[in-house]
Amino acid sequence: MAALQTTDVWFRKLIRLMDLNNAEREALAALPFTLEKTSANRYLVKEGEKVTRCCLLVEGYVARHKMNREGKRQIVSFHMPGDMVDLQHSLLPTADHNIQTMTAATVAWVPIPSLAEVASLFPRIAAAFAKDALIDASVFREWVLNVGARDAKTRIAHMLCEFLQRREALGIATAEALDLPFTQEQIGDATGLTSVHVNRMLRELVEDGAFTRIGRTLRVSDWRKLKAIADFDPAYLHQAA
Amino acid sequence: MAALQTTDVWFRKLIRLMDLNNAEREALAALPFTLEKTSANRYLVKEGEKVTRCCLLVEGYVARHKMNREGKRQIVSFHMPGDMVDLQHSLLPTADHNIQTMTAATVAWVPIPSLAEVASLFPRIAAAFAKDALIDASVFREWVLNVGARDAKTRIAHMLCEFLQRREALGIATAEALDLPFTQEQIGDATGLTSVHVNRMLRELVEDGAFTRIGRTLRVSDWRKLKAIADFDPAYLHQAA
DNA sequence: CGGGAGGTTGACCACCATCAACTGCTGTGG
DNA sequence: CCACAGCAGTTGATGGTGGTCAACCTCCCG
Image (cartoon, rainbow over all chains, first blue to last red; front, side, top):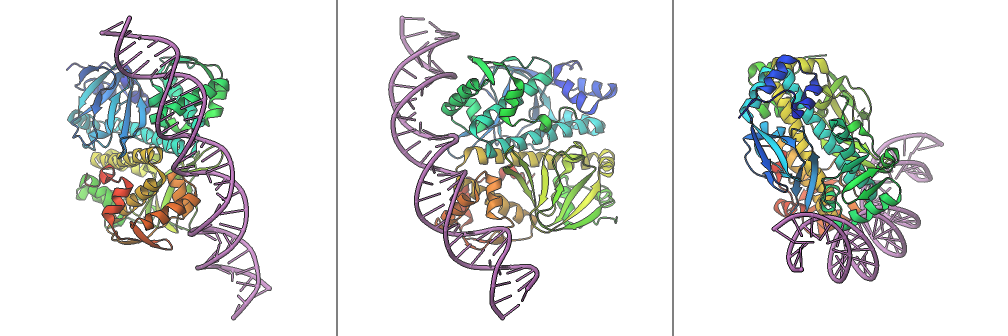
């Protein structure tokens, strides 16, 4: 275990959420953690498990998903560096969903008692945790709307918009060209569609002039058009909050 | 404004979540609030609004919903007495969804500064708030799975199971016979189906022997069978937590 | 160079939407 | 007291979105 540096990408988000002061930043930086590097498609948390530590994503991409009776997988969210993927387990020790890496990834495991301690000593850190969780919930609501009320093309476009928008907020990449970390099957699992239909819709989105595509690399030619097709309004991400 | 009594139904849930002690209960009971009685189908919060107070549901039923571009409504959750319907607005002042009564209802409005104060003075109350929000999020995840990965009959059955399960936890009613506060159109809005198809599926569920139906009153003949049809596992409600 | 995962395309079909007509209930005003 | 409006529910006919199945392609990596 080593001390975190406040400059690490994965606390920037938290610091921004509540505009944390120096004492608060140092308390976060002093949290103990264990780094773990994993390959793609590994489970970090499995549904039903008792969880004793929380994982913060440092590098790579992970998804959270649940399965129905028939084993059909529904991705309920995806995450990128800086996301506190399972902060919820600090208060709800039994996992109600799976967390799986989508690419090779690095995560920092933080013991729950340490998180609880810092939260009870620093009410504004607790508030930042809560705010992060509330934004998470807002994104879930939008996903319910997305899979429940939009047609296939709109759904996929919306998911891509969210990915672009969140990626831009990280400051890692511009929106213009980006490598998607998703297979078409994963896009299907996130949107409630089959990979076959995802393929057809991606083709149509290219025909519509929303973006061009080379392998998994998208080049967004007209961001405004893509957002229009997608019925996308980023308010639900509460990025300015 | 008057003082709350700790015996009021709508704090029982919170008290149970963190097993709050007397000082904490009294702090909750001392919160200022305004009672409001409304009729059915009234908006309590509208998407895009700035919110300065939080509503706790005392009596009746409310739903939270969002709309897509074409005005198609997606209900993302329903709530019953004792639920803190929009605790999230204490930290995210801009509403990202609508809150609407489904029946005549009574709500208690609590000013956000009062909630923030009690949360910062009592870390375990803050934790109870957070826990409630996390359970909320867990329910949203299950809904994403429900509308994204289950067929129509299963979806409807699942929604009914959740309603029954949560109602039972309230101690208001047994599971056997209950009046649904939903129209078939609302069930459709919650499951991403049309009211016509909801009607057909309800008929089939009756034919399958899951329950009988007189108007909006369900009599569940075989709770185990209904749960089996619904692919329902109450773990995601974290009721024991 | 061979195997496997992911991607692409076509043919066919089922689930659920759409449209429409009709019923039954409830509340309300003449 | 009845007429009637309006909403919710019910049922049938038809059609489209997206699923299923299958074949084949492409690329990467061992």
